[in-house]
Length: 256
Ligand code: OOG
Ligand code: MG
Image: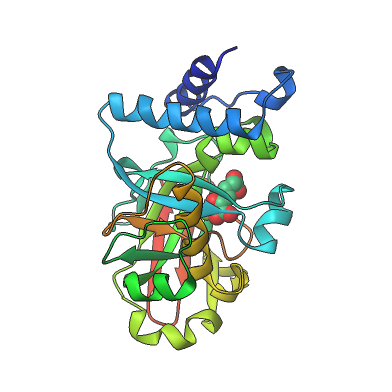
């Protein structure tokens, strides 16, 4: 199969909610750069279908997430406008395969961050806001099992996200140690703090800016950047209620 066909197969898996076999199992040679190209073709297909790019995401930036999926390198992907979960808090299950939720820190910039050579100080100076967020990952592979190349080709399992209203920028100094709870139907199922993400989730933004620079791209002001799951992800079923609780705000949805 060529890269265009692989990208179409992955998009079809999204549209029909039908998981596929890992590409790395079928293709003799499927390198990380092939996988990045497949991801880029997938974005092109989505844009041609009328979707809008609205941000970027980092993934596998915490030990908890890396162990969870058995891939031990940070990865990056894109966010489409259609991924955004309405604040009304309903997550549609009929457009997904086997979704999981994870608590994240979202960042919005007030000026473009253009690498290479972006430093942590550059990120801090470019900040418009830092927000409590959650991401929905929904691997297009059977049983949520994949290798690095597979998950990169699959746009890092991106499927949905929700960004809170409370800007945590005034509390930047205490961000890393804020306590975060994930509840499923009222019960606490995960706990964590932003420091789990590379020691500081702003490093994730720095990493993304420098990595995009390798493709002559930058992080534009105003887009959403998800910095990566703080805890391992939590699976849920139809009817479940999920709450991601920060000291300042609770993000929640019901799976319907
Ligand atoms: C891969 C995507 C990882 C994160 O925040 O670590 C990710 C997956 O878990 O399916 O989004
Ligand atoms: Mg994530």
